[in-house]
Length: 114
Length: 114
Image 1 (spheres, rainbow over the protein chains, first blue to last red):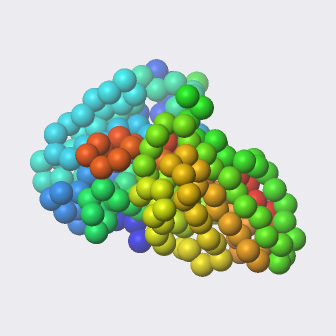
Image 2 (tube, rainbow over the protein chains, first blue to last red):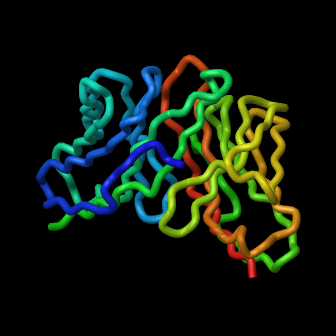
């Protein structure tokens, strides 16, 4: 079973910041938090990942709480093209750290409204 | 770079037929994965490979087989198609150990078994 909890759906106005929450209360100290999104039946797209510190890239920012039990993905200026299902995933390490697996939940359907 | 290429994009199979879903990547990624996604659900891992000649089972391997004779190719074989295998199949790849890059996904194969 997935180790994360996300809201089923969210709305956001175009041009505003979209804040997507994720709970991962059982996360281990060496487990990363990954975010992907899937736009209408396309293959998932990597967005960002983090361990302890907040992260930012050209797509989004990731804020991880100090206790690491939750995180928030922030899309700073949402556009209609950001409408997608967003997946928050905790990276499960395999027998070797190199072959980690991702356990996917159902994600959050984010709808950007004009 | 073409990234991850999957063929075919769509296929209808009759119960009991067999087929191979093709996946190739031109990024020299060591790790490759096959997922299936049922409607409204997250992805479930079928098989994965950490390099040529090495494959391992994921969460839902029954009814499928894989091979990895080259770094580039990772075909998925369905031997006796069943209605329960109706799904969208995604292939993904990522760089080797020591990096934390996200997965790169193909555009998917939509399979219907009737």
